[in-house]
Length: 384
Image (cartoon, rainbow, N blue to C red; front, top):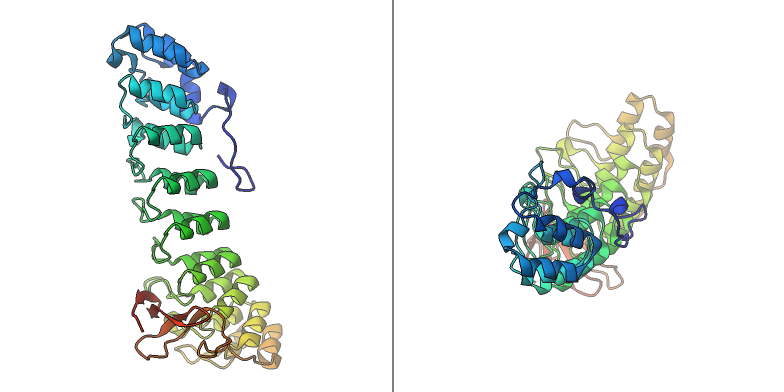
């Protein structure tokens, strides 16, 4: 597991710190079925103690298939190879595979030795299993998660780098459609976000009818918002109409994330983007009594008189709420100038109105227009 700071915990030996899926198996010998061959107990003891010579000796003296029957009374179907991987004993892993055990042996829920090693951040075992041609894209049955999905979920950044360096697919989606990048974004793991983006992760992949920029905005991860936009993500991409058609700015305002609001505005987000019923971010700020957000939006250039589809302006919501502070902000805050058009040579990178007129927005990389375009929050590509 990762620690509270998101760092990687080094592998530790001994049953006290043993992976949860193995601890009970080892502490209670009655959990093992040893009836097929008395050597089972010997090889298990050798694996637990890291005795590679003891493992080789047992493998040389008995039928292989009998030696790997270490099912528990809960039918975990873990083999000694899974156990060696979980305990990070790479030499024993190799000895067992060379002795005939399948590197793709599946335990409960389809967990292969590689997946067991990944779940427990056993990097030495992962390296050795990959050297022995373990399938790096193997997935479990329950979630459809690959080793990289597990590394992202548990915040194992070094393991993720190892897997990516060995060719893991950075865009593998589990059965829910969630790729590793979405997991890293949701957890605010900017180091892993950067690593995944640098290794080909796509900013357009996201499950649950959301977008990555929306998730980062909702969670208050301003640095990740900027990083995603730098890699082509659309700061105006909205979640579907069957939700509320909210965009990242709506999420930032609702969460009170001022730094995210600034990041989105700097990236060219539409400050007056209408959601379902024409609800703008400023209307959200007014209706939900967030004067600091309302003031920031107006100073950035949001229109305080922009009504929703019912004709209600931000000030109307403030009056309905008897919110005198909000009314003061909406009335007295000087309206700023919206983020400059990218057509200006000094403009920073970001999304702006498409100068070709073919799409709603086009991405400006700080020096030239790119082929990244977006319409109604849906991103695509169209060369200039």
